[in-house]
Amino acid sequence: MFGYLEQIVFIIIFSFFGFLIFRRSKTIYRNISLGKKEYKSFNNRSEKIKNVLLLALGQKKMFKKIIPAILHLLIYVGFILINIEVLEIILDGVFGTHRVFASIFNNSYHYVISFFEFLAILVIISCVFFSIRRNILKIDRFQKVELFGWPNLDANIILIAEIILMVAILTMNAADLSLQSVNSENYTKTGLFYFSNYLTPMLNGFDESQLIFIERTAWWIHIVGIFSFALYVTYSKHLHIFLAFPNTYHANNEPLGKMKNMPEITSEINMMLGDANNTEVQEQTINRFGAKDISDLSWKNLLDAYSCTECGRCTEECPANLTGKKLSPRKIMMDTRDRAEEYGKILDQNGNPEIKNFLLDSYVTREEINACTSCNACTEACPININPLEIILELRRYVALEESKAPNEWNMMFQNIETNFSPWKFPIEDRFKWNKENE
Ligand code: SF4
Ligand code: SF4
Image 1 (cartoon, rainbow, N blue to C red):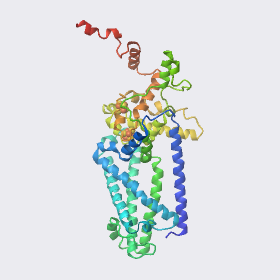
Image 2: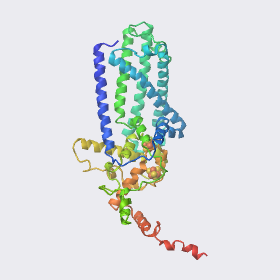
Image 3: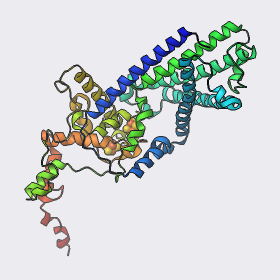
């Protein structure tokens, strides 16, 4: 089917995109590895696998909003299954064949392709629905300030790209059917493709060479589109298509709102109490308490940031955001990812990433972190168990412990807890006086 030249061009394009995707994946892996190694998931292996099956594959938490959940699932399943056809296209491209799976599936081939076409139509419908929802209905969580500009454009680019890819499949199949009907050489009979068949009347006026041109053009648009899409995804929020799996695998099913102890502080206290053997970090050099930049966070915090879909379900539930404060947990995740990208780029240029910018102040402001009530509603709402609170707490710990710049009211409270064992300024023995006075 293919001329040698077409085969060579295909192999060059395929290798070129393969190389770019591999290089970008290595950069993302390196950026995530910039985080501290100390994170450990407390789940056992079966809990981890259950998380992946329920949250990433089954999208369980998405079903709190039933219609978007079903449409999201359709896009997801449709897109994954349609990629089986991509495998066929790649094999055809490399070996110069045409519809190589037709001889494997024999009489069932047209059922398989018709099923893919059905999924393609569902993907188109879902993408149109999501575009209307985002751009015309303007639902609240897509109108927050952190989405202005590139993030909104990114979401729209992906929706449009998916529609173009699906239309290309249907056009390619319709042109193929037309070529089969005129007994064109190389276009062997496959049986009817049920959905693209409805498009064939539109191709009635074309002669054989024009039909071949249409079929080939749609084929190239589809496959180069898929390669470009795969590369683009690595620069976009749609990276969650892949990272949702490791992220849910490594997530923790701990009680809501449970905060991590700081081993450095635990050790200090144990030492103060004379329990020097019970120090968790005796050998460790402590650079900073809390986090000022991404290198002070754990690799899981950074994996969270790269996995964030920017869906805004966390911000929608955040009481601080709902009462008009500047804090948006989605923005915390987007800022963390943006800073990790910047940090990695400066490292690649052999520079020092911490000369001018830091995650704290350059990206996330103190006003934002101070507005957090530590309620954990964001983590609960997140479809893939991302934990924005953990990052906020680490940034706050840095401000309180390294800079002693926590708000005055907090410092008074800390002092009261230290001296009175309660947030109030009354000595503990006075606290129940009211009770005695009423006896
Ligand atoms: S933990 Fe903080 S950021 Fe998360 S929902 Fe509660 S107030 Fe918002
Ligand atoms: S943290 Fe989770 S809920 Fe929030 S925007 Fe990202 S993916 Fe959505």
